[in-house]
Length: 196
Image 1 (cartoon, rainbow, N blue to C red):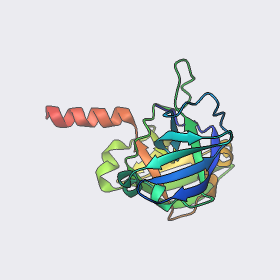
Image 2 (tube, one colour):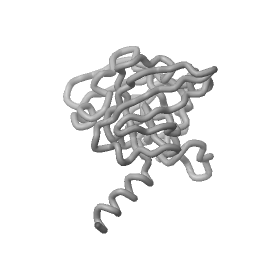
Image 3 (cartoon, rainbow, N blue to C red):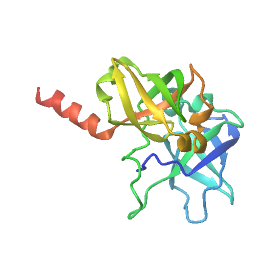
Image 4 (cartoon, helix red, strand yellow):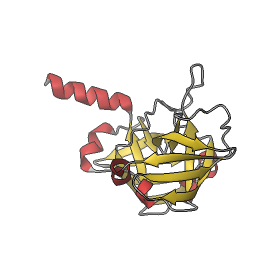
């Protein structure tokens, strides 16, 4: 489990595309206490550390993950929002994030507003019901509050700090991002389906 509070921006160092793809990611995260098998959210995707060094770790990615996320578009030099898994007692600064990506959100527009930026996204129509004003959403691993919702489009407000310490400040219209809907919304809607 994660909170969507980014702790480092890592960089893809290499990709081995034989069989399951293996990504080697350079990071400033402290890795000494991270055992093999530990989970790290990479651009919002919960991935397992299969190898590591002092300032890098490797993850293996299946074809299913490559087809449902942005991982298949990563290349050497791609910058990634990183967050290690929660430990008991850690601060819950964002919201509960599983790292199980629901799909791809497309950035429609960026509008500066004072020192912040308003970003408008669209998601596949089947996810529209999971997104609510003032609710939470995770975009490329970042916990954000939804501002406005219209059908399958929504806006988020990115404050200067988040703009600078995540990869969101490097986006352009048309970019695809991994998104995960709020877990609470997922279970409430599922319960309504079963009970109706």
